[in-house]
Amino acid sequence: MFPQRNALRLSQRAAQQLRAAPVRSTVQRRANSSDSKQLPSWAADNAFNREREAVKHHAAATSDLWRKLSIYAVVPVLIAGGINSYNLWNEHWEHWAHMPALEDRTEYPYQNIRVKNFPWGDGDKTIFWNSSVNYHNKDKAT
Image 1 (spheres, one colour):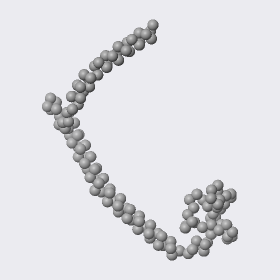
Image 2: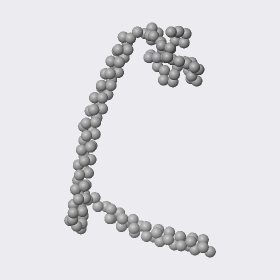
Image 3: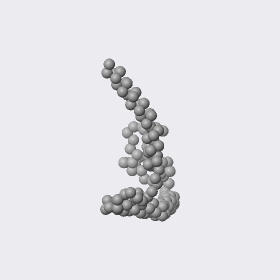
Image 4: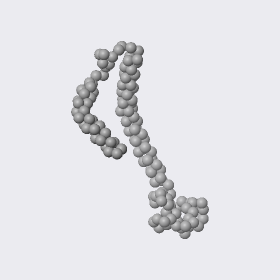
């Protein structure tokens, strides 16, 4: 008996909402169509509303400041940093070219210690192995 009453009430409420929906949506659209940036003419000129307007103007000015900083300060700094990084990269590899060959460098006992093989590749190279920088001679004894 109770489920039947609940179903009846639910259907009545749904029908009322469906009938009232077009009227309600039209009223809402009309009320929200205003695009005024200032206070409405009916709003009282009191301290609260003046403070709200001041906060809006401050927020707009602050947003504009950060937008300008992002465009006119950050972008040139990123470009300058990229150029600096590129120059440092080239200097590093120019310096590296003057060093002795990898095979001629001293390999100390604490370097490239292998207790067991790695599960990838030939088992001798670490996961971040760079053949132009790293060198390991398995047969070399120091």
